[in-house]
Length: 230
Image (cartoon, rainbow, N blue to C red; front, side):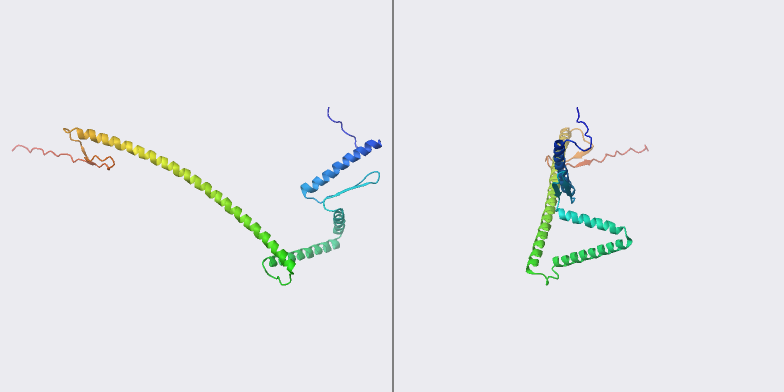
């Protein structure tokens, strides 16, 4: 039989209540951890038992989760006021401008510009970034070359197979040609053996098996008709 449905209400028995709390608490903490890992979510969980004991879980740190929650709540309340909403978007624009300025500065430094204000440590970090970027570019280039080489090898194998098939066809045509030449030579020998009859065409009297055969039609004999009697 299947497991019966549990009624969601307070458990009166203290022992059963403590056992259920322990099981459900562990399951809840496990689900919170899985949610943060699988979905890349920032999760904060706080549980107080009936005896006042604290159980918590945070994917980053509990302080950062609470600070973010308070900030989001304040911004939500501020958006309800048009004047506060304007100030909020002005702060967002200023923050985005700062981020854009920082990214442009980093781009110029990566291009080797505006390096006079950097310290030796900053230059070393920049060099490490460039080396890592160069390593990634080389790895990608090698991968592209390997893919192209594999594709060319596949094409070469395909062409090689086609070449083999063409050679087989040429050999077959050559054998058929030899058979036809033998039949023509046999027919020529039979015609050449009959000396009394003249064939309507002439055949070369060469007997070289590899020599080309020349067939030539003979001109018909024109018989003169006798004139009328005087």
